[in-house]
Each structure stands twice: as C-alpha cells, then as structure tokens.
Amino acid sequence: MEFLDSLDLNQHLPAVVAWATNILLAIIILIIGFWFAGKVSKFVIAIGAKNKHLDDTLFRFLGSIVRYLILAFVFIAVLNRFGVETTSIVALLGAAGLAVGLALQGTMTNLAAGVMLLIFRPYKVGDFIDAAGCFGNVTEIDLFTTVLETFDHQQIIVPNSQIWGEKIVNHSHYQIRGVDMHFGIAYDENIDAARAVIEEVIAKHPHILDTPAPFIEVETLNDSSVDFLVRPFCKGEHYFDILYSVPEQVKKALDENNIEIPFPHRKVILVNESQA
Image (cartoon, rainbow, N blue to C red; front, top):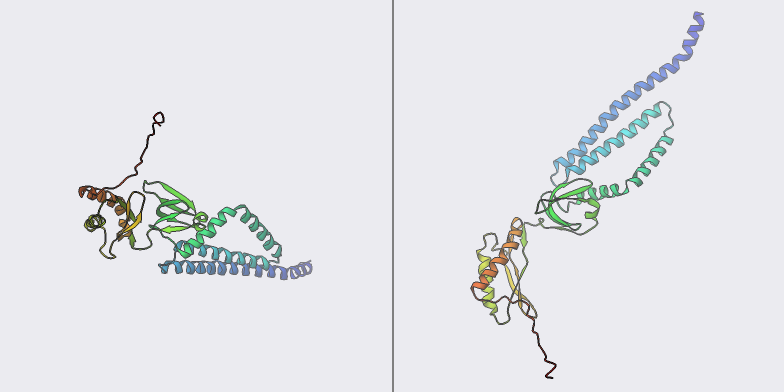
C-alpha cells in the first residue's frame, strides 16, 4: 500500500512542480509587468510635465495607453505559462475593439482631433478664438471637447472634430494687434482736416501704441462718402476696448469740428400726370 502511495506521488509530483513553477513565474511576470508599466507610464507623463511647450493632458493620456498596452502583453504572457491558446483571445479582443470603435466612431473622431489639437497647439487656455462658428475665451481643452466662455458669460462646449476640420482664428496668438475701423466723411469735407481729427483721437487713446505707427488713409470713394481705413495697434488684451471705444470718440470729434459724416440720401421726383 505504501509502495502504491509512493508510486502515485511520484507520478503526480512533476505535474505539481510544473504548476507551482508556472504559478511562481506568473506572479513574477505580473510583478515585473506592473512595475515596468508604471515606470514607462510615469516616464511618458514626465516628458510632458518637463517641457512647457507640450500639453501634459496629451502625455497623461499617452502614458495611460502605454500602461494598458504593456499590461495586455503581460496578461497574455501569463496565460501562455499555463498553456492557454492566446491566438483566439487576441483575435476576439481585436474583433471586440473593432466593434467598439465602430459604435464610438464619432467619439473616436473627437479623440483623434483632440490629440492633433494638443500636439500642434493652434490655441491654448486663455486665448480668444473664433472656431466652428463660435467665439470666446478658451477655458478648457481636453481630448474630446474645447470649452469656451463668451463675453456674456455663456459656456460653449465644442466637439474637437468640428474645430479641427474648420478654420481656426486665434485672436490672442500675437501680442500686438491691429484694429481695423472704417470712417466716412462727405465729399465736400476736407480730407486732410478729417485725417488730423482722427489722428488726434488716436494719439490721445491710452492703449494705442506709437510703434507700430497707426495707419490712417483713404481706402474707398463710395457713392456718397469718402471712407478712411484706420488701423491703430495695441496689445492683444486691449483689442476690444479700442474696437468699441474709438468709433464713438471719432464721431464726437468730427462733430465738434463740423465735419459731416454722410448717410444715405434718396431723391424722389414726383410727376403730375394730369398736367402732362
């Protein structure tokens, strides 16, 4: 009986040792895999944190992706240790990924656009932009949406795919901005006198820069007016202050100097058919 028990034990001992070895190796693979995945993820995130020109949101996302990819290979290696056929599992995961990708096609498009925006950085938080038919101050950029705040304190959430596929106007990209304005005077008025009045208004404005010099020239001879193009320069943060304050000041100055600002006139001729 003891001989049979000893023989039975000897028969199963290699299998037990093999399973114990596989379990030990699987634990070691998991420990090393989690450690390595964490290290690589932190390294990728640190790249974005150290470089001020790169967006750390993108690198946190890339770090997370890298971590999960490494862990996926780690789990496949663990399953191989136990003789599990992983080819079918990989194919199943691929099919499931394809199905999820098709179901979330719009979301994935926004994700891809968000990655491109974070890489090329056409705008950043704090910039005033005009994109996807919306205008406002950028308050947040993530991988799927861009959040804008309008002048009347409305929040606009724009999908990144709509922004990336359209024209983007960044009003805050350059520190110095030119402010284009148009003013018309009547044909009977003196052009040089009108220019002098406008120059005086521009010179007195506290936010208008002397360099570059303001541009004040006649642009168009319209049907009933001589139109000036006036382009003073300012720092970006004063753009809208000048745009909405200078026209009123110019109007008052032209009135004080008796320079007429024309408006459309219509001449009506009445014909008395009974006398004709």
